[in-house]
Length: 107
Image 1 (cartoon, rainbow, N blue to C red):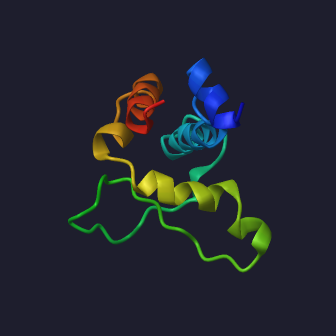
Image 2: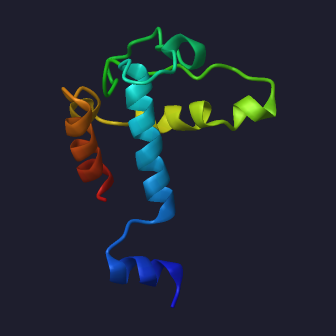
Image 3: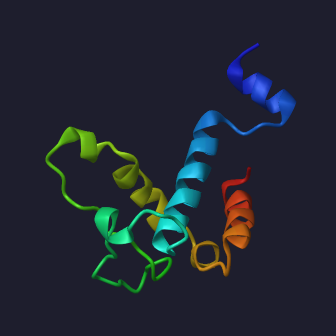
C-alpha cells in the first residue's frame, strides 16, 4: 500500500500538508508577538501595499547570499504566508487562526 493510500485510509493529511500548517502557525506566532522570537530579526513587512493584496500583513523576502539562510524556514514560509486570504491571517486569536487555516488547507 502506498503512502497516499495509507493516509487516505487513515484520514490523515500528508506530511507536506502538516509541515505547511505547522510553519504557518509558527509564522503567525512570530508576526503577532506570541513567540519568544523577535519579528525584526527574521521578517519585515512589505513596503508596497498593492490593491490586490490578500491581507495587510504581507512579508518581504530578504535577499540572502548564504544558502543556509536562503533555504531556511523563514524564507520558505513567506510565499505561503503571503498567499493566505485576509480572513485567515486577520483572525482574532491563535485558536481561531488554527481553525481557519485548517479549513483553508483542507486538513
